[in-house]
Length: 520
Ligand code: HEM
Image 1: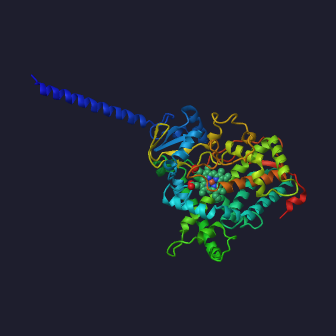
Image 2: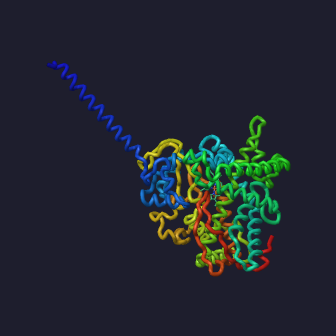
Image 3: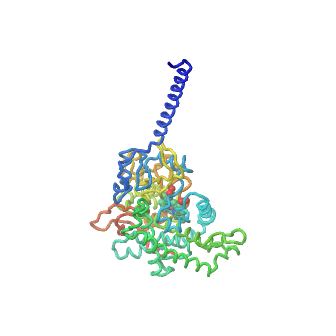
């Protein structure tokens, strides 16, 4: 027989263990609830969801959001990923949890093509990125510095008009991709490298073609979803020789930048700052002349190359692609073109060219650009972000190092946010209170052409000028129609940027007096 004391002890022990067990069960229930990943499509072993992605992954990701909700979890090989096309979720990621999500994944393309991620755009969050971004903001993309290139921008705008005028004389359709690509490239290289690559004072047709070719190859490789980033064994096989191509381009790009830096050192324009002559300083000059500590140079050559590489990649294609889409949509919609003409005729008139001072007053054209960013953002996704640590969004667990695909293409076509998503209707952006049309994002996060938070585009003001100026000049100076018996298609191809599948061809007819096209 058990005595009373033993019985009480046993009962007490049972009671305590019951409490401990239920505490543990409750905790693990809570933990498993908080570890719940966002919903998403079923996944295969090893490859996860990779096989569910086609040639237009932004459209696949958007249809996952339609099916599973505003925040979707995907497993891409060995990588955790989330995607969203919903303004509130995007605000949570880019603003409320900016510190958590402001890093970048270390992809193989970033390692090979951005000097081991030592640039700004692809560098992970940390002191290096902070320093490079500060150099961009404090020395390169300042209002004063950008102002100092207004003369070059105005020359390039006139060169664009003259180029189109000369091509229009034949009556043949003009390849607008070519023309707009050259406009963006010339603006960027004059500011960065002090060189025009296309046109009268160009660096020569061979150099220009070589430069264009390397940059296009670089964009293509940066935009690839390379399986080696998601399935480590793929790298051993590399059946399409992608990494080899990356290494080839890496070498050619590096040779190109080495020559540029050597030329700048030889000419010694960096010295100009010492004697107070700043207006001729291009970005390479500025970077070479930054004072360092203890008599050392402020920046290593490799850092200068990485930064210059970034700016070329970030500034050229984004503005050229946006301009081509805007022209395509406007030419496809003659009533929009008519309204743009009316506005330009009233704000600028027939006796002078559009200047940068006119751009804030072109309200309807600004709506056209906003509508272009809604329907055809420069890139289908923002540059992928990465979570620095585990966190939660909307009660779902997000593991550390999760890759974040913010689907800007899907955001502009989200039917919960926009009506008649496939209709190109600039009027929807017209401010009812007569205020100026903002082209970057508003507080509602319904359009996000330049992103928000720590990683937002530092070149947005310049990007807006390059886009508005090219469009304003081309619409002011010419009337546009599609080539006879041809429709303008609006299919896109996927990449780091998202161009039209086919280059835009259109017929231009001058609208101004002949002497206007020969102005210097
Ligand atoms: C129409 C023109 C442009 C568009 C649409 C555009 C858009 C963007 C977008 C969407 C991002 C990614 C933001 C993110 O990942 O959250 C970005 C980043 C960046 N852009 Fe732009 N951009 C344009 C022009 C420019 C120009 C002219 C420059 C500089 C000369 C520039 C420099 C950069 C840099 C350095 C970054 C990386 C920022 C970082 O990671 O800290 N962009 N841009």
